[in-house]
Amino acid sequence: METDIMKLIVQMDYVFIDGTFYDAAEINHRNMDEIPHPFIIETMKLFSALSAMDKAKVHFIHFNHTNPVLNNNSKEAKQVLKNGYKIAQFNQIFEL
Image 1: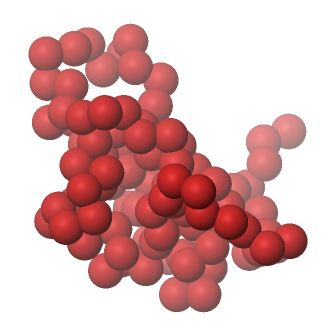
Image 2: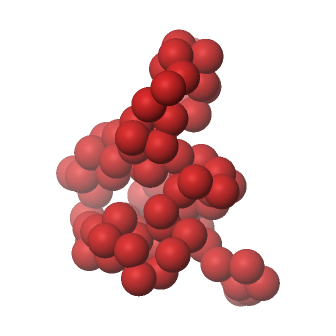
């Protein structure tokens, strides 16, 4: 039985999603079939139908050193935030 991630997000307070790579430009020299990480841009597209409240629950984590969202001032980081999602930060604390 497959789990509907959209339904799970609605039920959760926080959602932590792999954000290893922003898009394919970071790994243009590698075979995409060898990399089992979804791109942040793919995840944002998948979750685009979520409400603003539910998008705000999504925190991208686990960034490769090449990921431009590591720079809070990058156009990629700004786009993630503009789309309503969050970028987890070092030492960030989440209240349960």
